[in-house]
Image (cartoon, rainbow, N blue to C red; front, side, top):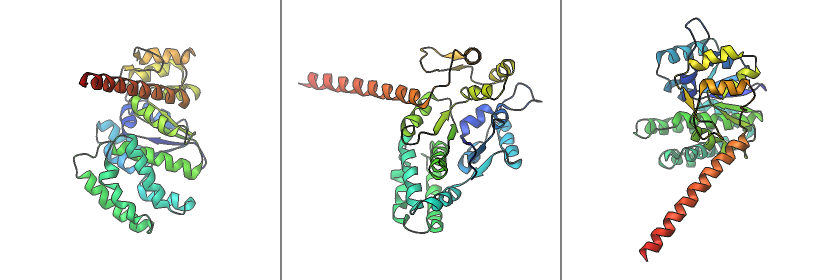
Length: 282
């Protein structure tokens, strides 16, 4: 792995950015790839992108032209083996954290059975890992698997390369905040960026205002939630804010505090409800 900037892409980001103002122009995703650095997609995410056909075709073409690199869990295990005495244990621990991050029970119901194999070879562990994932995929609860693999990949890239990692992920503000809240303090150089947030980088790398407007108009989503704004903003309003320097890219700390405040308020409301229910019961 090189020491250049590392970026990972999740399925939602790929689908939403596989658009262009006209058939003869590059897609937004290709513009983002033009920023430079190494872009990775997990094999699970690559297989999850099954629609729209434009996104499928684009992803295949980018793979063929080696503009993105598709990696699997064996690749991640081999990366860990170079720096960790117990690579399988580190890998499984990261998977566990990411399953908890998205509130799934994948680890408890499936991956947990691999704990007894963490002292064995990577080859044996990986064989068993594939079997466990087949069971998970055949179940009715394999939700968030692509996101889990994407975050796992980002964490492993960081702890083995000690370099900045950018996660291009969903516009879902809750998902972005959750990722940042979990990892911003532990891994300071892991950033989460949405499709609309990518325009900050594109402007920094020379995209003009007029071109940015044309690309934001090509997005299927027309309104976005912005931190510190009570109401949603249209894509054009955000572009105007970016290019007039009235909007800035939120840092990990700002996003983390937003998530912390949300969690604290939720906890306070929960305890108030419990208090009054208990008092009423008396």
